[in-house]
Length: 348
Image 1: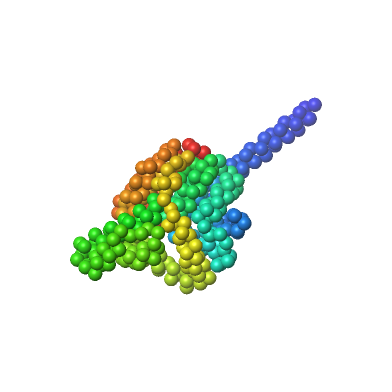
Image 2: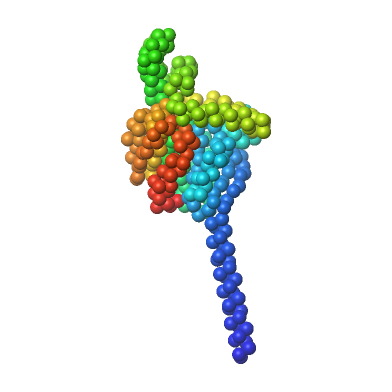
């Protein structure tokens, strides 16, 4: 009896030890770093994603890149500090980067509607793969149009939306840039440009040829210094990628050109103040105060029309269209202090 009781006691202790180790191991595994990249099926197309983070229990932050077609994986070092507070997901959209490399110019259905639906499928994949109730989506520039459509279609998948380089409408961009160029030409006494712009009168937002003609000097004349510096960085980085990996450089460059051509009609048709003022999730805009590409005042006007359970607008001084890159530390601190707590409270 005593011997049996002693053995039984040892067996129970052993089971408790095994159980405690299993629990400890499971907790450690759930909180471990994640770093993986793969092609996943989205919209009947294999599309490239990467998932990187220091702690799997962190909220998932899906980056929806702009461009159109400007894949963000070359900026991995910029995003590295973000991985301490978020599990950061990069996605080369249909027609961009690695995904373009797989299908090239035969990539089908490169439209706002299809790319947005791809994004919804990706959110569902992340929901299942990473064991989350909801995720955060961050859209930059063109990506803010895609991400807005995503949260409109399936708000139940998203704890929060974050827009930067936030689009309002193509018409607002065209008219704002036209007015700024004309004002600068008059201030500088550039009579040739004044004459050229005054001959246009009020630009026609549906006339893409007209816009690309008169806006050819927007970068050199109007972009803030931070955006000018970032553009120079991108050019240097492109040279480095071209030298080290010509194939990936080709995919990046050709993908941007290919996507831009295909989604231009969707960009021209975009008018978010008319189509997307009802947002059923937490809504944040973190915008460079000096953004000329997607003009900040237009982004503010659109923000004011948005009705959402929670919304907040933050302007970053001395930053422009690429604020999330050129003021990355400040941008991250805003994500951590403002977005993360709200998103966690909403299921992230």
